[in-house]
Length: 95
Image (cartoon, rainbow, N blue to C red; front, side, top):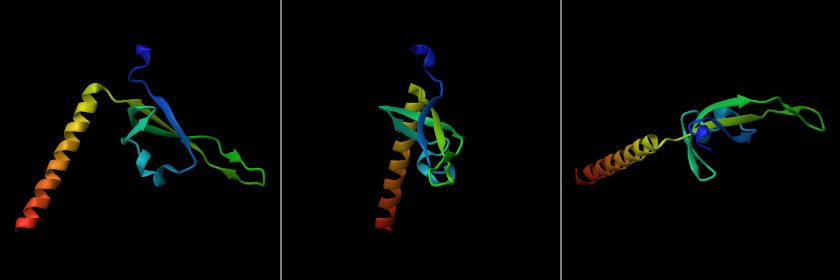
């Protein structure tokens, strides 16, 4: 379905609060069903009532698929960071 390309998609539901889940923070990359997505937002859902009283909070994590250009930029950025780390490690051992 090409008309869906670039559109947001619900990636997962969680009981973990957004401020406790750095792995799925807005702007981060996550893999979902074999594709890479950029997390775009968190949506808080209605609390789930528990049988013994009280409730449980729940959120949905939304994201949009990465374009080929974004994927290339991410790979190049990661490569540069790795090379910088190697250079820093090499200069510390020599000096």
